[in-house]
Length: 429
Image (cartoon, rainbow, N blue to C red; front, side, top):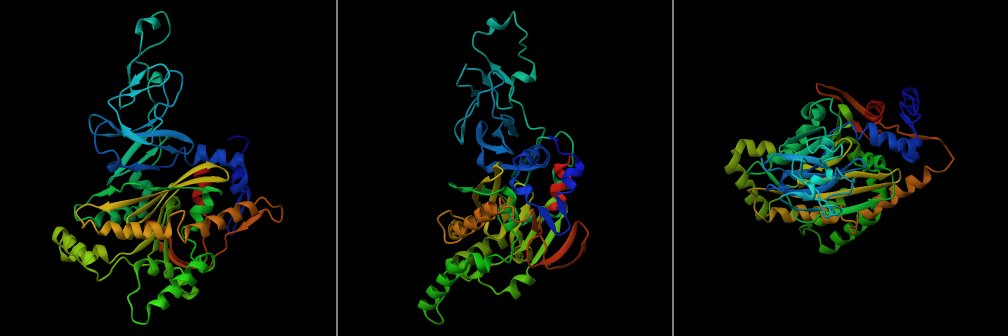
């Protein structure tokens, strides 16, 4: 394991602290790419991004460039973005549609299941060891691919838990998000954010359920929103954007009571901060459409759930109430790409999507009033961890809880705990 033994890994994680090398050591980052992202189920994309045969979307699993593509039999495939001849990346665009993948270098073509299709001057290979039926000359596929309610995951490891077993209790967050659609289906909206964070990928993951940072980190936008609300006058309706910003300013006593459920494999679900419910005509029209599709009782049950960040470790976070997904793509030990996708609820009034976009623009846009605060904090943590002041990072937190049937504990957390057990178990293979 690149010079690391199992004991080496174990010594980096203690009950209330972790070693700073987990965030700053390039050699350990390489282990994570091989043992964590190379074995776990990684979110690749949504099948609505490739609605027709030949449609593709490019992304990465760990550091491996891959293509999610819909084959002619309508199945979704996840293929390495690499020609089986000279190794060139086959696709340079982010998305598109093809009848076959054609290499820009020597013109080899591949079917959308990855198998070799045609090569120029075929008889020129007759006296060589080339065998067109040998899979090594095609596009290698991810070892396993599964689609759960439109969300496509892949694993580079041939063995391991099936997707539903791996997801465990956090699967409820995906169900929650899809159930909100009157047609029981989601669709990725056009456009998305891409943010390069100057920090280790785990710093972002830990912050997703860090309930103690908001009041401090986002103080400027909280104060500004309070001032603007005051200018509207007493009794005036507070715009949704201001409600979002003001949510970060709740007192510590409120944050401490907010619930987080922690599951096996590092997954978790956090109670909602801002409710999507309102009495505006658009939302009421949406409720009516959901009641017509599901029945009044079922619609009431679905809409009674309010979740904020739900982590599918190690590659994604959902905000089901506002139909948003953030995807985590590590680039290096101190660089992380985060992509933010907004989803439409099929069958819901088109205006409902505007609330999703408002939420995303206010909170997760790189030019928003919230995101830059977080990026600055992440960078300072990353830079601080290069200091020799201490080798250890505290993960102590105030928590209460009890065992759950499918998870570790149901807890009230005042500060986040590092997903040490999940990291340790996957990284050691």
